[in-house]
Length: 383
Ligand code: G3P
Ligand code: MG
Image 1 (spheres, helix red, strand yellow):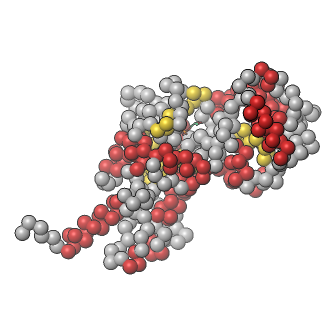
Image 2 (cartoon, rainbow, N blue to C red; image 1 turned 90 degrees about the vertical axis):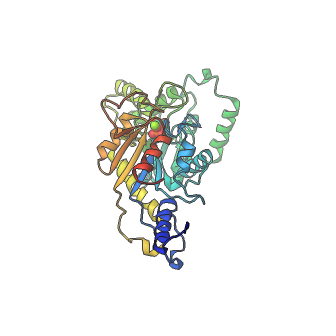
Image 3 (cartoon, protein in one colour; image 1 turned 135 degrees about the vertical axis):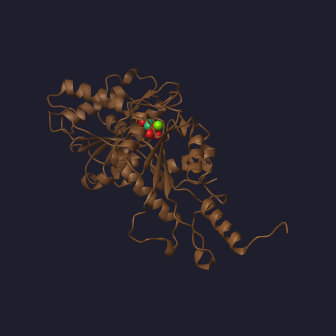
């Protein structure tokens, strides 16, 4: 007969298909089949230079990411975005990425440079702080629970003449000024003239470097009260230390690390004691440890069924793939983190070489993220 199957063959095929195509929870208590195994691998994707260039998708990223979902839209392969960028809350970035890539991305799947700032809540929850960078740096910190936060834009507007170059900045439109005055009168979250700034958080790439360096030197040299005598330097945190990154322009752009060098060099020249600061982000190995823990949580949400959760036990991955474009940051970080990390370097961003990078060679070099996902799925035996 042409179509002869044994029941066990049909069943094992069904099990194989299910384990490969749909890893999300179903009502297994009513199913005759055992639940699919937990995936033994996970993927971390860099964003700038891998998924997007500026604001547009690159390297076939929508198609690549869509392959990690089952047909019904449920997640089948645990993955997250591990970026040194940021400037908006994780929930907002998740919905921006969902629209861009045509899949449903949860905020848990977005780890930005500033995401670990949440861990500093104990220390700064009720302290006056300043948030710096493009986007909505104050909203990011407020959403993490910090109660007394001002963006550097708003903070600077309380000090007339703090930036002597402001009248020459023709790009500051009336609209922006009106918006600023509205924010000022509605809810200043602390009194900038009497309460010393205790912490400065550089959330994302600063926009107006000349003003920000001036105002930060003022805050940092005076112990948090611009215009006053010298004082102890408040704490200073950077979300990352990327010297350069890939945006829409063909050559790399200066990043937060370049801003840090500019600030540090000027501060150290005008001040007696050198700048003290802490930088987060890749390539710090703790970022990769944290990403592993978050991927474990993602696996748990994919397998919410009781008999599948080893309560209290961390999920153990045999391989975690880091797909990045920056050898010094993404590949170096994955190498320093060690097993189970496996690095994949794309040619769509900072790295444009023909062969592997000499100083920070990746485990695999590919052209695009689409090729990266293809190779990973093949290596893991998934179509
Ligand atoms: O500003 C963004 C940049 O520094 C790096 O972003 O996604 O390449 O880690 P990403
Ligand atoms: Mg990148």
